[in-house]
Length: 205
Image 1 (tube, rainbow, N blue to C red):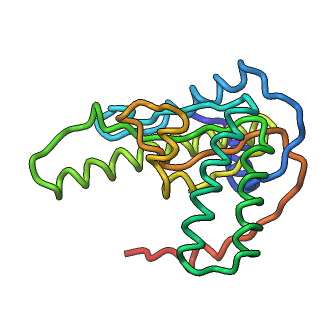
Image 2 (image 1 turned 60 degrees about the vertical axis):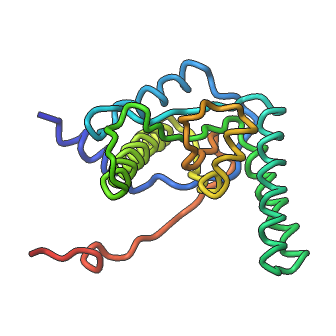
């Protein structure tokens, strides 16, 4: 049985984790990165197929290449939407700074290669959803341990909008489907957050 103090520590970690977007230049030790990734792999997964995949970027040239490609697509999409050009450039610059300013980027991907396959689209879609849910839980494991280890991290959804672009830029395997990325580093900011009362989001039946 878990000691009561450990339960309180875990609850405290969960409540106090923040999305951190600014980091120091201090590198993250390789052993710690591997520890975070191993924690991710102990998440629950549909059929125990472990569909998560992780692309880890630590070199500035790789982060810049990804940030530039995603920024160019962001600019093109927002221009096509008819948005204000100054607002677009601010958005692109913010995205570039966010990706290149983190010591580590971890692109979170899902692979269906080991999942069940069905002839009909409805069950196939459910299988994809199960794999995606499993991958999200793996990412949450990583975020929680990063916080416990004194790191800051932020989940970024942008790769979900341009999965083929991310795959091409990073030369990822065909079955890897980018879902998001995590920026990671030692925090250079403190952040607070609030939540709506749990009673407003729950219905006991």
